[in-house]
Length: 439
Image (cartoon, rainbow, N blue to C red; front, side, top):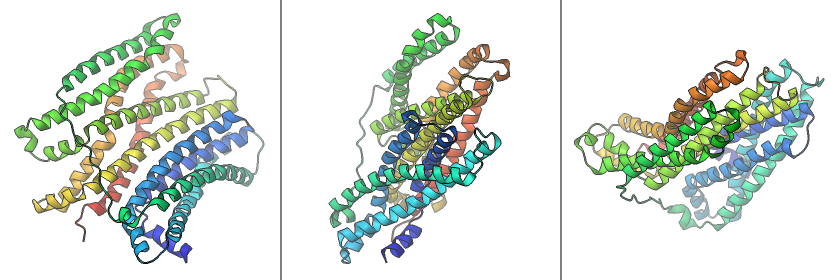
């Protein structure tokens, strides 16, 4: 009975689990590819399992975060089961069984996708005389299952503890915590700090490009400091300006939907600054990993043997995908939570004459802005740095790899667009239930 009920609830709540399914499947696919490379290369040791362990650790944090979100989504339903007489232990088993079923589905999908991706590579350029595809698939699935079991064990234990502590009242009445906004009149100061630090950062990049090789170590060692400060100062300046613009009550802000969008963007001033700073750095790390991985895999650069080259290159690309998954998953989850908490404002706008299509368009604009705002500073950095570094690489790498950095930046942009469209569609689909008045 519990199995049938879990399957029915999983099907009925598929939209709630959509973000969980996508995140689990993508990261398990990366672990599967990593395990395939390990088996083919006949490698062993901590450095081989370090990437799957890193992904597993990140996945535990992400899945725990998403599990908390799903628990909040299902809070009233779970409280209803308790009111109808179901024991808390049985309710815990029911919910955990449901989560494990979804997780096992993600495991099957992730291993299949990961092995399919590696299959194109393996059958085109085999490294060893391993002729049986089934043996490789079975062994890699077993290794991936060990990491999957570790992830599910830790996340299930944490979720079970949380469920045991919950009371009916906590499930029925969940409080929405809104952060107060402080007036920031010093956004101009942050603008000056941003300009000075960004100039220092560009100066370090110019030093890397134009200084003799003996002196390159000095700008390289300090480049991260002005980079981090300039990213933080940029978002302090931007959100400070938007908040000041909103407080000035200009006539232009009341035109179209500018007031709603500006108020939504600046509602959590301090949190928005920190979130955008962290995810901008995450986005930059993702781009660096992508470029490094593709460069290592270039046949013109014979820095390592074939097995090690494929392992290191794939590891870097995997880290890129992990960072992108973290970036879009957490931002998407924040968006869904914000839309759910602000669902009552949709009813107010409907009473003011807004149609459902207009409200949906406003919500989609909000989603698009929140998903892309951490990319603003990253795009500014790329526009200034890529041309300079590309010229340096043209002098260092073989002629066949001329302008390789520009090409890789374009490929990373395409990859980012694919992720953006997928997660935008997921958030838009999951937010539709909050756009209409509750019964």
